[in-house]
Amino acid sequence: MDAKLSHRVATVALCIAAAAVAAVAQAAPPDDACALLAPAQVSAAAGIAFGPGTYVTPTFKATCTWTATGAVKQQDAKIITLMLEGADAFQAGKQKVQSGTLPGASASGIGDDAYFVGMGNLASLFVRKGNVAFKMTVYGQMPLEKMQAMENALAQQVVAQLGSS
Image 1 (cartoon, rainbow, N blue to C red):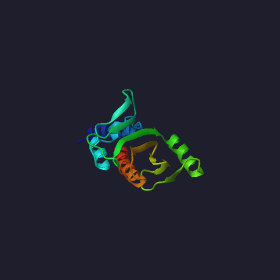
Image 2 (image 1 turned 45 degrees about the vertical axis):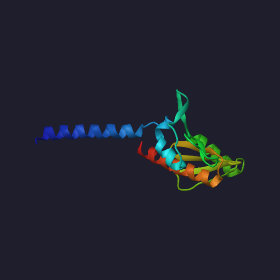
Image 3 (image 1 turned 135 degrees about the vertical axis):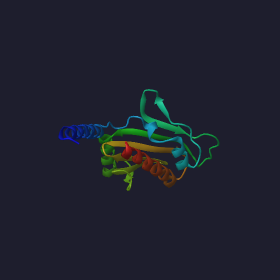
Image 4 (image 1 turned 90 degrees about the horizontal axis):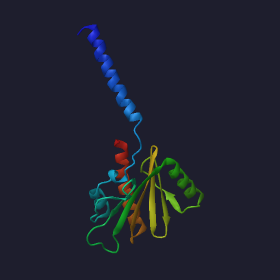
């Protein structure tokens, strides 16, 4: 291969590599909550069948809601929601938990940082991965530990999606 051709090949390769790096660096945070979990993943975590995720409105895709289908027992999850939020909202909530203004506790092993907020028999798991944060909530009449375990399992799957996007 002559020197001119080698130089052109190297230049093209460098341009392709630079474009790939720029695309990764400029990757926008996700804005479609339903795209982060499949109904099969929600069903597996809850132990019962759930339908496809739906949006509050067709244009607001930062919150996704999955609803149980078929026969639902008293102790089953009925609705599961995933709400995307900014890291600043995550941090504000975390400060309220740490100060005792909001009832909750830190959660470990999920994303870069996580905490639970609980009121009565309802708990939500807030997770931050990089500059993306989200809230996972399971609704149903069940023990708090079971609810938190489901939220944890689903949050792990969302975090895995965020890592690959």
